[in-house]
Length: 220
Image 1: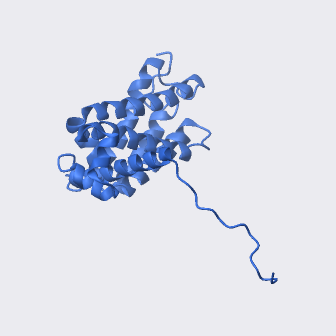
Image 2 (image 1 turned 180 degrees about the vertical axis):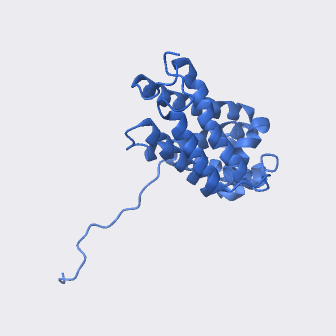
Image 3 (image 1 turned 90 degrees about the vertical axis):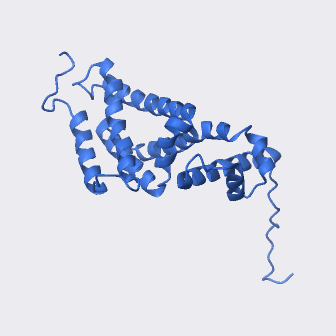
């Protein structure tokens, strides 16, 4: 054998199990549905368009879902879980609640800008996939309230009572929802996105800082 001969073991092809293929197909259908709905809306998201974009036959669709509506009803919660994973990674190193909320908000803004169809999926779900809308809201608020509650227990929110935490969460998450709205094409009146982000971050700091003007203190 010559000195230059390659003595490494040959690379064997990786065999995918049936379970791997099933999961891959399901993920492809969800990605395709998100793209079609983000561009054209739920009403025009036909099974044919979704499967064509996913590179699968229409019959394969019904291996996973009994109808378009069944897919619609899980789409937004799955996208929300993906988004929360990205946001949680961003705040992993935060040492205070304010740092975490600022980092989470910035990551949210970046996500929405990177995936402009997310807004259409979110807002149309209110009427065309209400089950998905409710579940997405439940999951988002539950995680956020849990984070705020942990901070409250550590004394980071002295201006709030425990029963006010859900309302505080609704206000903070409302800033995110409104960012999506003004980011969508055709929103009026036009608001500069960078200005809205900066004002939102200032509002977050003000809301979470102890003893801000107007703060009542926990004992009020």
